[in-house]
Image (cartoon, rainbow, N blue to C red; front, side, top):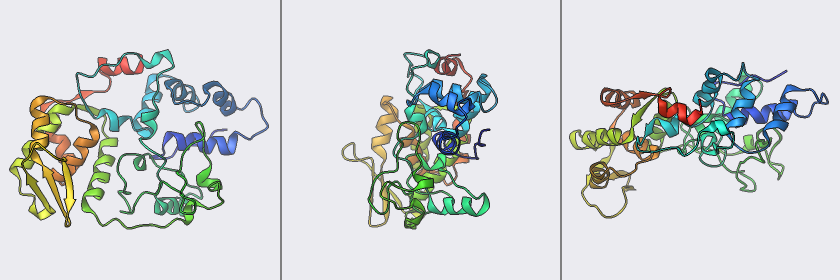
Amino acid sequence: MFLNIQKDESFDSFLSRNNLFLGRCSDEASAFVKAKNTVGNKWVYSVVEEFSGLLGGRDLSVIEMILQNHTLRPAHETFVDCRFKFSRGFAQGDENISSYIRSQGIGICILCAEDDMDSKGFTYWRRSHQTDANVCPLHNVRINRNCHACGKAFSLNGLYSQFLWEGCDCGASPMAGECCLNEDWHSLQVARFYCAVLNQSKCFDAQEALSKVVCRLESVELDSLGVGLFNSLDGIAHYKDSSKWWINIDYYRNMAACGSFVSTNDIVRLAAVAYRECDEFVSECTSVTSFSRESPRDRLLLGA
């Protein structure tokens, strides 16, 4: 017996649901209990490998499915600096992959949770709510990351948590929290771009992607989106003032020219200003450079 993983379900949500409903069973021979006892309580590659056997097998295709569809791996590897090298492969079984699970405390959209209860009779937390975006791309409400009653952050105890189903330690239900409508177009755009990034199966050179964004910012009219450009190598990269987003174009132009390290978050947030649709941005990146996650770099990453 094993619960089914849901569309866009975060891998830790999947393990937590199984831990809640199957981990308490009296059958010591339970496949889940055996797997749970084997992997311990650290986010390492062996966790994905061990539980992939319960989802269809331990071959690379099943592991790839989990990493691609239920972790933040695409958010980390869609735009990569090709100079970056991994010191060890995951085949050693001790490589930390915590960043693949989430970038911060667990985030939930109450409206998504309510939709799940109405349509499925249960709920879970979504992978798309665990990125650096702070808005649900479907409902345009702020992602909740803390208990509305005591302020405690939603997080895991080891690999497993029951807060969404059994409530916070203070007794409050996360479902009783307040839904705050997002009124910032850029935050919603970033959330939608992250969703598109999570669905990407190819990788793009981060420097090439940054150059595309800088060229786009210099060549299109952005006033309709409430965006202004300014030139200065000093100060912050972008900020909001009087409902207008200001982009320090020289900051990013200098990054592109000098080959400075740029993160996925930098690229996504900037591209969300320069492009109306992420597919258009990805299409431009593809025309310059792209490579499959089955490349030698990726085989090194997966220890294949």
